Length: 86
Image 1: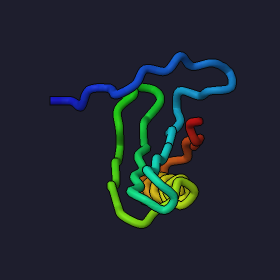
Image 2 (image 1 turned 30 degrees about the vertical axis):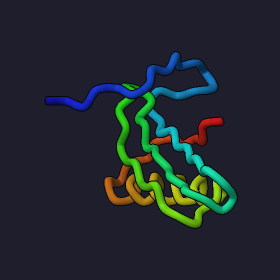
Image 3 (image 1 turned 90 degrees about the vertical axis):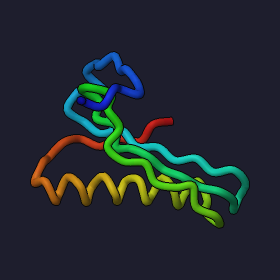
Image 4 (image 1 turned 135 degrees about the horizontal axis):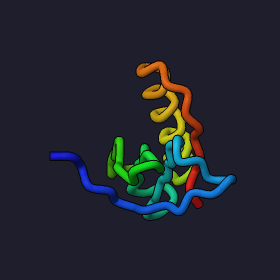
């Protein structure tokens, strides 16, 4: 069974369908932090979700989400665009 989309994007010239979106959230600063991403914009399917982890910050989560997505792209030898949701 294929994973279901968690979000639907309307692609435009500024949002490419062949891209990965990442985001992070934190409750407190520091506090419980999690990041996800790895949402493939073309189909809205989440690629990864990490956390929650204690003692994190939103900035650290955003950074880790980008690094995680870049590592996946390198591993799969894909060259998609990557953007942070806000």
